[in-house]
Image (tube, rainbow, N blue to C red; front, side, top):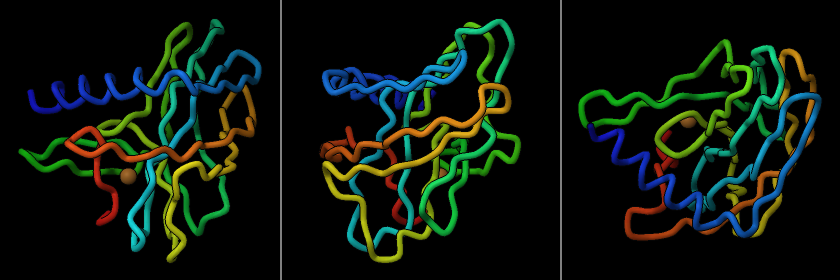
Length: 160
Ligand SMILES: [Cu+2]
């Protein structure tokens, strides 16, 4: 149950930032508003979020994300009792035909790893390439946004 209520909070935050949405498209895949939250100075990882829509008639799959970091992984989040644990998705994320998949705090996310003392700062632009099994490669920019306080900031990735 906890996971569901958390997702509702995250969805609210997503709508609140919709005014600065940006969108990318390749073949039948549309990527809306790739973003990341600012991180602590000492953070080694940061999460990347977006909505991926497949307008085609065949399923597609986000198989990799490339960016200028020592490692970039695709993660899911599972609740282990009250503890949220992140796990790498070796096979990526399926985006079914005609559907959207949202990467958001508490769920699927891109994990930028090995920040090495260069934290994400508000208004920073993080270039990345999304690799889809069918649609191919898509260059996008993750906008770094303010981490809202009071429980609206999403998952803390700093100890990942
Ligand atoms: Cu993660």
